[in-house]
Length: 450
Image 1 (cartoon, rainbow, N blue to C red):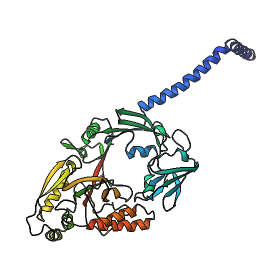
Image 2 (cartoon, rainbow, N blue to C red; image 1 turned 90 degrees about the horizontal axis):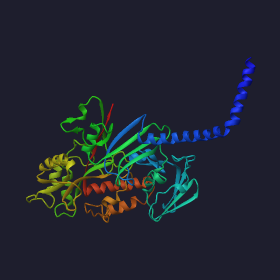
Image 3 (tube, rainbow, N blue to C red; image 1 turned 180 degrees about the vertical axis):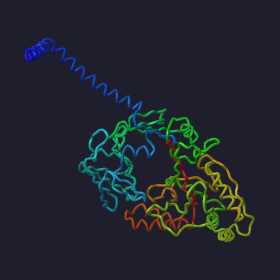
């Protein structure tokens, strides 16, 4: 009986297929199309309305697609080199390199089996740094050669810049899922983990620190990075039990007092040195700096620090062109965020008989006696653009042939021991004839919800 029913069932199925096979085939292909369409729509839906493990991060600043912050770019890709915590280039996407032709040719050998986020293998011809005045050659898929017209030792740091193909297709742990623009400016960018597409980071950008804090309070983001203080209106983020507040030192930024070395008073090195010895030992807003380099940098040289010494400062001032005369008032122009630190300096200078007037400015002034602002620390010790006589960014109008020569040599020699000697001399002579006083690396705070 069971055998008869089984034969009947097989017969019915065959008859059904013979009669409706065209419909079955059509619906089969329709089902495949619907299946892959759902997958495609699902990916788009997830990218616009991410679910799963999501981190929303607020950052202050106005950015375009051409100048996204490094924290975002580092998630998306890597450079040929990486930079260690002490500023030394180490292998990145390149496993090794060699430098020849009087330190003008840089040959990089790529690591094997490196893939872009779209699955394409990394090949030398896909590396498109677009450097000016550099000839690029690709002897094979795993070798790229940069031929410079002049030797340039910071080049190994330059190629730490993350590598991308078109549309920001990188080689990092994340890939871009969605970007929201307001004109040319990026309002937000969503990235997802390559290994786990449900692990999402959303970066939002805000023009001011107040706007960034408000976004955190209102719940637009659950983490904010790099704020200068933890106060908001009449309260402090430290008072919220459900928040983690992390205090850090921003070694990428150096708050600095710049002298106009062509000023009729400040052109005298004795006066600038005297003022240098009358700088507070500590600042409430940051970690004290005594050099143009952070102590973690391989080129930093100990022994050049000027500690506060009021009596020595008085001796230098009295021995200067200001000695024996009624000392004129100096004018400090400062960014508003450094007003508190400027007040501390003014109090100390009063102790050596220097009266000072403070003016608040919102950018680097074209004309000044003294300006308190900041500059971004380069990853390499090369500071040619800041202090060389012929550079437009030399806002102090500094003119020191010895410093010029050291800066020129320091960017031509790749041997680290030789560069260390050059930059040791650079620090010694720069601090002996100071165009600026290096004040502190600012404290910054990262805040997130527990």
